[in-house]
Image 1 (cartoon, rainbow, N blue to C red):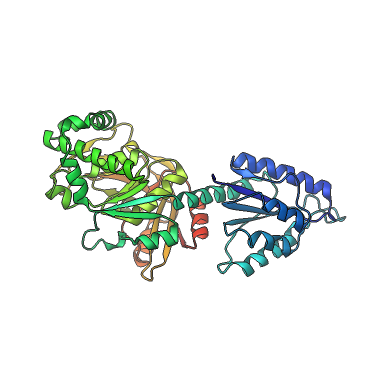
Image 2 (cartoon, rainbow, N blue to C red; image 1 turned 90 degrees about the vertical axis):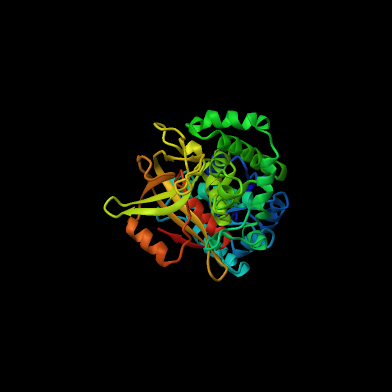
Length: 446
């Protein structure tokens, strides 16, 4: 079955049914506008028996539980004992305050429902919104919850690959398959980098015409790269593409140095860049949680994400520069330069990507972090990607954070965050916070 959002409107028939019907109709219209995956009953569910009959027909990934009028805790309890999915509890605003009859009493019903949620669930977690259908905040909050729940479902069907081990001193990106499965629902498989290197060596250059055509259409300056490295890049790209396709991989982390420089003679950076452009979230330095962060950001934004280190701060400008050696998605390159190819800044071997990233008015800096005690946390910070040229050899993006840049840098260092972050090309902070809540993450938002 596909993703499903279930609207569950509850109430009792002793309140003002004309007002209740009006709110029901407007709620259905708003939810239908927000998602084509929404299901709803024909009318407000006014008894526990009517509710139970409706619940028999649904299999939700997200419940929007709305007290159209007051309803006691038995209603919410009936929902909670059947479904373990995330819940948005939605309270309606009283339509009229005129000294006369209380028409809905939705707010009191919400207290009953919330009390039941805390009784049923150890974490007591749910999303909450107060307001009438069509209000901007209501639409934004419920829309964000729907997108977060969609991402949560996508994680459960995600198969990731760890290609090679993290280098010494980079263990922060290493992941256990059981840990990823139990926390995120993600399947992780592992393969040695040498297996893909050997697979690449088995191809003739003539086998890689499709890969070369794509690269020539996508990046600039490949003709300035030594022929041996161009050939090796094409063979390696074909090997990665084949592995991804044959094994149903949706995201991967790849070892890079020293193996691909020493054992193969050509870096993997441009291969990862093209995979990212094609929707396969791919991190370097074998950072599994970095790749997971990229996948989440890509899923929420529908765009490639940037992966890199915080390497520079300008307190007066309020900016942080994120950089990496040259594996940024080529479709993130500035339009005036295009996706330029260069050589690795340390090893002086190409092809690697070598450009500044295009500006964006709203970006989100994000990281799935693993804590020393084995728990997880989400780092979330909003900002803007500025119109800046390449800052250093490799790929870079300059982010003006909404919070003071100094606070972000000092705070993340003192809190022990990993040195890799993802820049998402959209404002998805609200969605990320809701996803973190749904997954039981600690939220660290700047």
